[in-house]
Image (cartoon, rainbow, N blue to C red; front, side, top):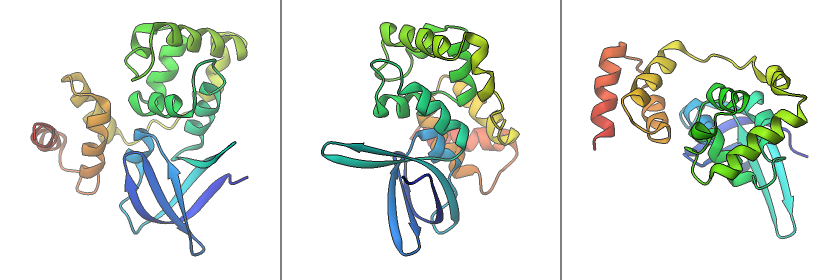
Length: 195
């Protein structure tokens, strides 16, 4: 089993990261959350991975932080949630928002995830809280890194203005290197989002 990759990031796309480790290039499917946390190509990167072996396919999934991988593992245990839908969930909401929605049985928030209807959202809330011994059972995942306050503020400002998180994350990632003052970052992000 491949549990972690450490090497040079060769390419990053919103759904895929190519990492070269010891002369071998590993292509890993990623969520938009992980995409937003990846450095620019050419930099060293660590991906926490999950290997999927199916009858006619072997796939590698990559996660920027181990907590995202743990939440992925929980999500795919829910009846009707496969790897693709779990990655969509991790990319549509921040980990903290996803945990809060599950804890609070917030079906409305969960149905904002592409591919998640009301029944699936209800199953996510019910099955995860049941498997973990009630709503307090998710506390083990609450030690998620809060992330960079500048990035969180920019992401929050843009999503509060009505932009979808999957559109906002690549813009925030693009501004990470220069990190202009927040007001200027919002102005630049709005310009990019309106193209």
